[in-house]
Image 1 (cartoon, rainbow, N blue to C red):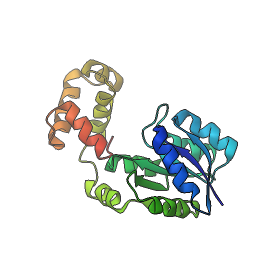
Image 2 (cartoon, rainbow, N blue to C red; image 1 turned 30 degrees about the horizontal axis):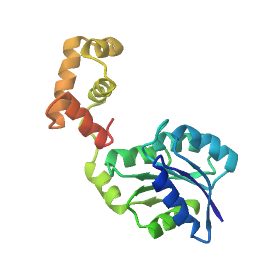
Image 3 (spheres, helix red, strand yellow; image 1 turned 180 degrees about the vertical axis):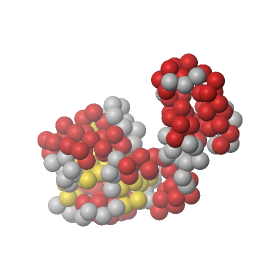
Length: 201
């Protein structure tokens, strides 16, 4: 029997998923939550084989929860569910040692098969998402441009970024302009969006 922890903040969807999975003869939902902060405590209490995690939840998100589970309870493998098939999210999920990455509109039979695959030590990644991630390619940004853009993404203004990186304000502006140009972005925030969606931040 494959023991599953289900983390999804939309109650109706979570209950529907749990009911569908319970129809499978070899899958048992042993714990449910709608909050990312409860994933690790529930996993430690119930020792599931697989945690199926929504990417967007109150508390820590599903990818952070996957990384935490990998560190604290490596026997529990993880599969991420998302409505947003962004290449950046897939890259982040794989870096967090998630073994599955599926869209929420996946057929129930495909989800059950993915859980079995993940529980057996394999990977279950939506093929279209995998292709999108490959097509996104490597980042065109230099290490310093990425660093500057990451701080800008966190809401830091030019003077704060300059102080944090021991650069002049003019140099920071030059790096931001270069990042905007390389990404064919309209402005700084558009550059942040493009870089995040592509998994480069």
